[in-house]
Image (cartoon, helix red, strand yellow):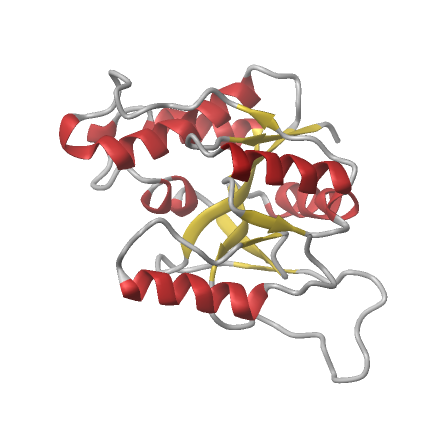
Length: 218
């Protein structure tokens, strides 16, 4: 199965370099789309930040559809990826097709283990993944997977801000169509967030503390 990995980084060369190093370390590469700035004419004056983020996501999807790849893996720039990502992505692609998904969420924010195969001294020799439906209170678009048909449907549904109540990946792309999460995640957020809201900072930090495993993630 052919695939591409797509990302965007909002004027943060350190994050961008770190991401490139992580993907290179596991034998993969990431294609960066041109950053949508807040002065982009598509961004509404009253929603500059959120519109820019959303249009960055939509441009990643357009980049994928302009390629010949069967699957697109879409990433934000503050994630730790699985060390065996090159080997586990085909498992995710197979499940996407087998289940008939529009969106497979592979990196997101939960502050608890969705499932566990750890029995103390014994851990699985091979990666074991579960695929689960999820409710609207699962947040985060750190990494998600789309096939070509799903990507085209997402673009058709969310090309214009007026089509949805909140023009943000958390309210649109990750809540679209037939969807599932993969667990354990393929990508875990680093745990910091660009906000001065203490509650948000605490939530992101707790999610990273629960999901990050240095033996699994780079």
